[in-house]
Length: 401
Ligand SMILES: Cc1cc2nc3c(=O)[nH]c(=O)nc-3n(C[C@H](O)[C@H](O)[C@H](O)COP(=O)(O)OP(=O)(O)OC[C@H]3O[C@@H](n4cnc5c(N)ncnc54)[C@H](O)[C@@H]3O)c2cc1C
Image 1: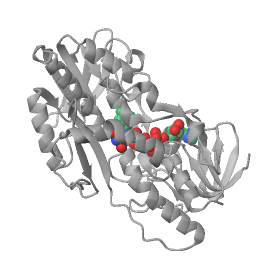
Image 2: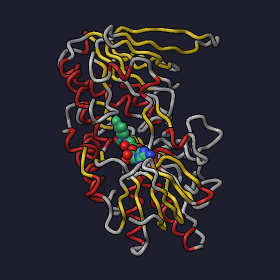
Image 3: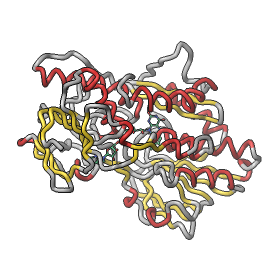
Image 4: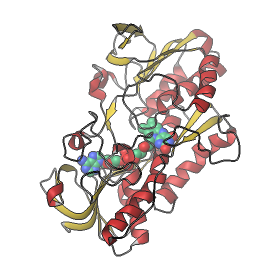
């Protein structure tokens, strides 16, 4: 195995594989190494549908090996630290790799332990999360067997991957319970660290109607501090309008938890992190994905500090721009490619209906289709359930879309 690459990629997830494939499609002779510890690759967007009983979790997992593009080396290791002045990374095994250009795409870290008691109870005591491959099927077990009572869905105050995912499963659960005569016997709570239901007002309006329809009680500006699984109690706190801290608790019959999230610890503690943000995102130019201080380093996807919603849909527009700038850097030519903050969040509002929220840095809708996308539609549900998974495995990871 080589120890020096023209392009070294940290992370073989959505962004890492798409970037490697796109680079090699443009420059076949480029030497590309991908450092990725996991033997498996996951299509995470389908975990929402797994939790709703609409997708087989086994179809979201594939062998990483099958998606390493031809011409790239897979280095089965994990990066531990960066030495950008020496153009070098050090792996957990102690191996050192050098590069001409570095792509940093290790995704986001799920901070389960920031909620006291969560790790111990997750996957049992009616506490679940679609944010893990192991527990997404348990969400469906709980929804299907729910007989009424109190159901809680949480959303942390930090950015999360797919900002809409914490509420998507809530709407599907409500619809399922409504159709099965359970919703009338149920109190549904959305406990959120956010300040509103959705950041783009056109899409928020639709969701406010959905929240009303299912009689969901919303609690904004809240941080979950603890969960007591055996006693089915959730503890959270938030500031009231006069600024004083109010602590509350809820006894639940089922809880779907979205954990707080941040940049992986090895990024946070590295010289690549944005020193102005405590969550440790990699500091890049939000239009080009070039690092603000180390010009041969690039980062996009969930780990970057680009102020947009962290989604695979965003990566589909980010990766080609980053690839242009990276090649321009290597070839010492200019590039005018710019990313406009595009991201998309497909939000199912009931089984068979979905609102495809698309927007950019200006938080204005940026719709792909020639119809009003603030209206949930069956065609958009089909897009999420069938078209996007196919597109991911066959076109996006292979650098064709
Ligand atoms: C429940 C859920 C629902 C979602 N719904 C949607 C949706 O509807 N639409 C949408 O577009 N997106 C959705 N997403 C978000 C989408 O999955 C992510 O935005 C996307 O996967 C991010 O890609 P990434 O490459 O940045 O990170 P990832 O795909 O997570 O890949 C990161 C990779 O880096 C590797 N890595 C970690 N540490 C190291 C290290 N030290 N060294 C080397 N490699 C390392 C990891 O093993 C991993 O393979 C959803 C996510 C979840 C969890």
